[in-house]
Length: 86
Length: 217
Image (cartoon, rainbow over all chains, first blue to last red; front, side, top):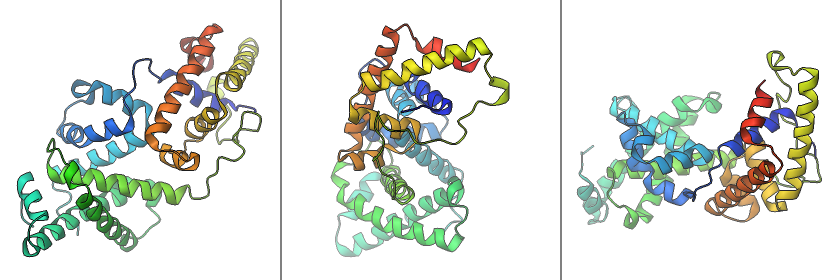
């Protein structure tokens, strides 16, 4: 095994973002995602709404990717950008 | 397309065929628009596809997503708009599909603490962060300790998962499938692995602040 320095950076980042408290899992995060995304798409900050979900999103790329996608679609919908599609 | 309240969506989608059919079509159309927007505007990895190809993808995904929404109607809690909840399901389905396609050949074979971690792109420091000789020695020492910590603190399964997710940026969903588990269980396994690694390193006097500073200098 030999770590490259680029990989080392990723590893350190991953250790730094780990949290000691009880972690919220992906299923629980997913349950909150629609409500949270709606409010974030309207301009609210995640940390002000559900900090524990925000912590999970920092540590879980999969959930974060899905959250960002949902927010992007909602913002497009709110601004009328979806009207010309389809 | 009719604007419906959450209650109307649920009533129409579970109503008689003459009520259900247009509601299903409205739902499918809404999901298709959202997915098409996401694929065409938010995915830089799909820019090589034509509008027609993306349109077909969006149509197929929306069809599948509509079925999945119908299968999960009972779990809608009403915390958000119904269409947001349905879009959440569609987004997850679309992204899962894209992940599976991208990582269809990914294997965990060879990701062992005794084997070689796959080489990654950009594994050299940019010139402006090149270490001094003293710093380079210190970094090499810390790297050795980290590599030892990976071998000593983690189980083989934790090592494989952490290597794939943290070092190779493979989605949890894909790694979970390869490990024969689910994303939730894998997240917990990774969480434990990160904590163990952090505690192991801290016990040797290697705090995350110290490592960050050392490798950022």
